[in-house]
Length: 308
Image: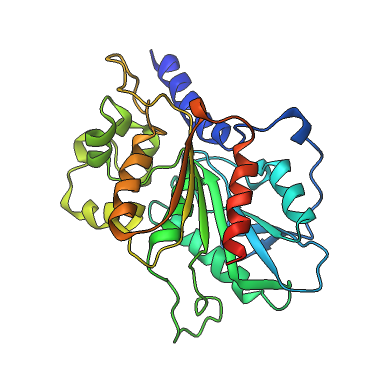
């Protein structure tokens, strides 16, 4: 029984990484160019590093930031899609791919704050790396999508009076991309929206440093739930988002496993309602109605935002 549970956990965690490669054609599976700068520290922790690819350009370039998935307990920046790298570099767009601290050692909101710090670091490097600090977008699958949405909707985390020049930079984006992302990380909200046992995803317990579902109602956790849930921060001045989902858009089966449904389209539907209320633009696709490579469609969306 224990072996069966471990197998379920592995499958669920790998789903987040699989989402990040969804829709790539075989033609897009090309060799990745080496980073211009590899494993550059944006913080002191071993996992607070990023890779950066710099295109040939006389003018400051926009940046697309890739944030990997993996249930906040695994994953790697090397999983960035080759089609994103090649298309961006050929279009004069810089690319960054980041690592962030795992919740196995640093529970929420550490991964989200690492995402913000990475964006601030890129702005700090704007002149040296030929970056246009006004044009930075971020995307990812699963956990990486959740961090990207956090960056899109959370108020600016810049600290203008900080002695740290990186912390003085803005953490805001001009666009975000979500592949199967979770717009809320409140397990009780997930239970209400998705049903079944999606809220019992094993990573959720690690995210909040709790042992079981019996602890999710602890009053002290509410502040953290609200902090990391993108939907809690939506406002009229937020950037637009591209969303792509592939899980079936229907109720979960009665025998759904723990964590099943954690990439459900209802996360997007609930976010769309919140965005509609404040007039923030979005693009939503489901794999059942989309033909082609969703990453290329996302890049087209990002380019339109960079041109504004």
